[in-house]
Length: 401
Ligand code: 3PG
Image 1 (cartoon, protein in one colour):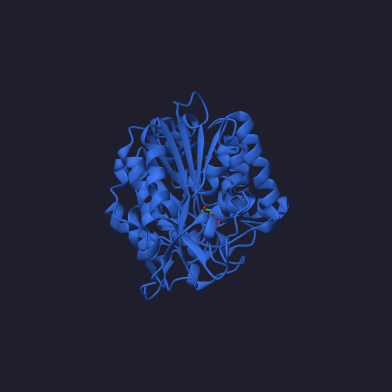
Image 2 (spheres, rainbow, N blue to C red; image 1 turned 90 degrees about the vertical axis):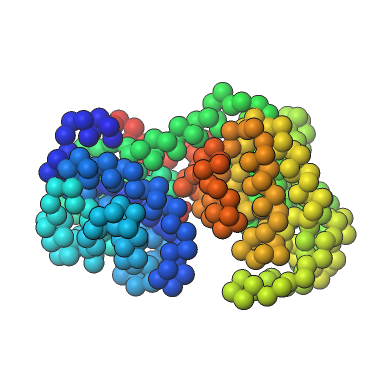
């Protein structure tokens, strides 16, 4: 992007594909981390006199306008963070978008409505995506890819549009990729990977790839129960992906051969039902050892002995990658496991990377200073797919820039 700015962007319409996909509660943004991360690139272009046309998806609308996924609240917050007016276009490539972009002066910032209100954005059909990309291209002279969280999506604005305009990678993408390289090339050891979150199936690719690179892999969250089952434990009514048990058994065996340590919970906090996240009514969980989870209980966080164990496993690490909460951290009774991991990262001298929307939100919700971590990635799926060694469409599209 510095090169692009150096060549002069004053008066040019610059399309910035950001990832402003933030969590909303009604119309209220509950975590603005991704908007803040998008600000530096937009500001740099605007200050250089570009007419910025920012765009993003939000949520997963079905290819048609849906007010609950409107980017209007995001436009307002972006304006507050930039300290300038952000003109909001009520559509993506229609009259409002064309008119708003046309009315922009040098240094102005326009935000288009949710790109996924147009079916062409996410279409699997190359021609349909291409047609939408053509319409987007008509709104701009240059393209800057900066939505790191969406680079794993082969979508019109991520993949097809850069092929139609002179393009560059934005500062956020450059930073994110630089950090991920440190997790895959010449990694400082010991290298600990902490994985949590609900579904083990979302993490199989990354486990598969990191087994060859990590020294230890700590498992928590809902996915831990499939691991515990694979080890022969009964997991009561905890979340379980029965069909993945043999796959996980295969990983446990491979890890043993490779000398990679899998660290699994030794105790969990369990209750008869899922807690109420709205009222946050006390849940009164029981602490149970993993070899004695009663049939009627579901595990909802890692227990105190596990918290200590995980802190110890992180203490001497030189590199740590963490993705996914350890429990239902949104409820105070089940936040301690996730808090212990966040604290473990901070207490170690390691280069620490927190990846993924959920873990990043957890860190902020639990009151940690996000600047104390080595890096908090704006990409969940994107950083995982990078670590899986996959080619990411949104990065491939910018490679020649
Ligand atoms: C994310 O939240 O990981 C990105 O914004 C991508 O969103 P998606 O999974 O809906 O494509």
